[in-house]
Length: 248
Ligand SMILES: Nc1ncnc2c1ncn2[C@@H]1O[C@H](COP(=O)(O)OP(=O)(O)OP(=O)(O)O)[C@@H](O)[C@H]1O
Ligand SMILES: [Mg+2]
Image (cartoon, rainbow, N blue to C red; front, side, top):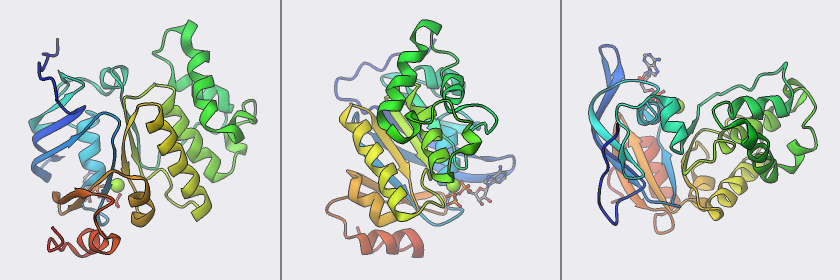
């Protein structure tokens, strides 16, 4: 059983001294980060920096070499991704694809597989409330949706799990600017309902416009942790893409 962390003002997510990678490739060494309840945190950085690796380790999709993750007061370091999801730590993977031959509704029901059967439709309706366009296509095959709508559906699959923290790894990759804005509107609505969001996003300036705080990751390290509103987008971009740490 996970042990309880009895602190009054603890963050929703706390990562301490995390090390992880793939076999002999160590991508992240000794990383600390935290996310407060209801906070929108952007995680930005160049390709290959380790952003996806970090969030996969947080949600137990890859093994941790060392370190600890606590979520909502419990040590979740050794839990499976499914157990993390049941506790409200939900991760929509980079490049996640919906099941094209299934309908929109079947895709959402599938994501609610470990929710009690009597509650599944309620969860699906909750997800529809964020995406009116998709709700109208509930009986269409997911493969018949536009690419952007399929990405929204993937986010909807996270929402049916009723996340306390929703990790979105590039949910707007490849989308037109107007659809990126749509994804970010959903992020804001989710937060308005009490969820925290960790958003990995290439469109840094757009991400900063909705985030409370931003982490910049370069070469497996968090080189900047700053208030998204006080940071100049230029400074964050520089740190994210040139690896500069001079913007502290
Ligand atoms: N499945 C894997 N097996 C081995 N190495 C991997 C694997 N996935 C990623 N890597 C390596 O780990 C490092 C970090 O990659 P990661 O995908 O976490 O970066 P990222 O910041 O998410 O990049 P991007 O912005 O392109 O999504 C890179 O050197 C990458 O080549
Ligand atoms: Mg990635």
